[in-house]
Structure formats: structure tokens, C-alpha cells
Image (cartoon, rainbow, N blue to C red; front, side, top):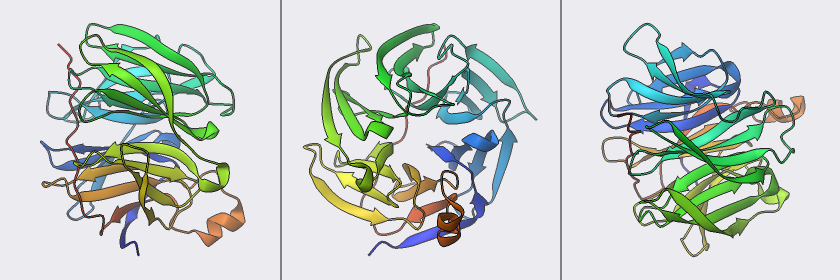
Length: 295
């Protein structure tokens, strides 16, 4: 039985982009549809929020305290949370399509950003792409032809990159070179039928197991590196979007959800949709995120 804590004072339209800031001991996340970056104290669940000029899908650490890299609809920007509000664009060459926006990201151990795009107006359109961006303002598109892109995620040994084509129900695994920053040999790692849920955000635990938030299935699932289903954790909201290990010991597991994409009847049945949840009985811990290198 899943033991859950519900963070009642936070409710998002489309909660996403969970990030543990181990230096400041705060959890960050985005509410994409409300254009908000949210910072949460996981001890008392007090929070503050900043308005963004565009939909914000992700937030990543930098080496500078209080300064984050964010993925907005039209590109990558820096946000300084130490000031009242200060945003500086880093790159707007991707997705370079008014119909598309950025969606989900991670960093590798060199500080390189890996991120995806999707069609904002027609999610079934195969406009999604996988790209990377480095501090030298070098952008590279590595693969394309996806629906809603999620993940991406580098394996703990830096040998693989995992990437979801959400609406097609596929998690891919690429061979990954940390030195060259290239991916190759795309293989299907997991496939899901729509009634099983659709793979959204992901993270690894210290045993190397892959945790996946399942949109439409009200659960988080845990897989081994061999693709074996190990366990499932139920969430009291159907559209589960992201999962992240947090806390000083990285042993607290938080899950974001969405309140959009449901009928009135479903929304009434699931009033906790859009809340932030904590899974209490998961029995493991995770990793800290690598910062984006700006120099």
C-alpha cells in the first residue's frame, strides 16, 4: 500500500520540472500553464512563486546560488531569484517554431543541457525533437519525430540517455558519450499501451532503478535497468507528471501532478489533481542534479 502525504497549499494546472537544490535545501518546480516557477521548503511546505513571461517547463541548477536555468516556451533563460526578478535569455534558436515549446530537461556531469520540444497546439503532431546545449552557446539537434518529449535522463554511469515519446507510450534508450556529447543507437527500452498510462518525467535511484511518472494512470512505476517492473506506487491524481528525490539524505520522494486534461466528472472524482505528493514508503534514495556550467 502506498503511503502518501499531500501538499495541500500547492495546486498546479500542469505541475512539472521537479528539481532538488541541495545547496539551498529547497525543491523547485514549474506550473507550465500558469507560467510560474515555484520554490518550496519541504519541511513546512511554505513556498514562493515567480511569474515567467512564457510557459515554463523546467528548471535546472547552475553553479551560482539562487541563479537557475529555465526552459521557457521559446528557449533557455537564466533567472536570478535573489533579485526581485531578473531574466536573461541564453538561447532562442530552439525550438524555433511558434507552434512548439520546450518540454523537460536534464544536465549531464559536464554541465551540458539535454532537452526536448513538442507541438504546443497539437500534441499528437510529430514535431518533437531532442537537443543539447552547452555553455559555449552550442546547440545541436540529435533526433526528431516525437510527440510530447519527456525524460531526458542520463544513467548514473553516463553510458545511456533515456528519453520518452510520451503519447506514443515509448521510452527510448540511446548509447551516450559524455566526452563527445553525442547519442547513438536508439533502442526501445519500454513500451506502454494507453490503458497502462503514458511515460512522463523520470529519475534514477542509487540502485540504478528507473522511476517513471505515468500520465493517465495515477501511479509512479519502478523498473530495473533490464526493463523489469519492480513495483508501483499509487497516486491520488490521474495525471502524474514528474518524480524527484529530495531532502538532505535524498530519501524523500516527491511527485508532481496536473489538473488539466480531465473531464468535469474526472476532476470532481479526483480533487487532489494538481497537488504535490510525497511517497513515504519507497525505501531508497536518489542523486543530486548536476549544475549547468555557464562559463
